Image (cartoon, rainbow, N blue to C red; front, side, top):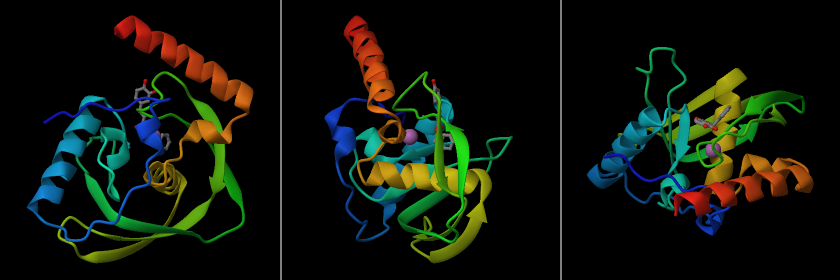
Length: 167
Ligand code: QAP
Ligand code: CO
């Protein structure tokens, strides 16, 4: 089932997600719906916050063929280096806007998979960027928060105008 995606500046995007207590079928069903929603968009990552579900759940697929779905439950992300790397980021909740954001270049990810089994990855590149971007969603933060207030306000006004036209 394709779920509606909240768009900036919707205040619900500022909600802090709660940990998943038990990885059961309802969580797996939500993860599957989020993957379907992400592929349909199309996007490479989606946090539960963006579909108005305020639990610590992220889905991602960075593969060319869009055949490598990944699920991260209760993720913890730890920077491994002080060095920061720039990346031109976008977001399904900020459609049509891309801006450069700098984040720690290498991170460790600890999370549960869709079976509730813990795993650990150390990574850099796009996976490091994407997991940090999605973790921010679970904490109510958006990539536009890293921009100047002038840039953020411009994006907000343009999206608000589009939302009014759609209403
Ligand atoms: C987050 O973003 C991300 O503006 C995932 O019109 C982005 O999937 C992590 C999208 C960049 C790392 C680097 C954005 C689709 C998709 C748009 C996405 C749009 C249509 C964004
Ligand atoms: Co996003």
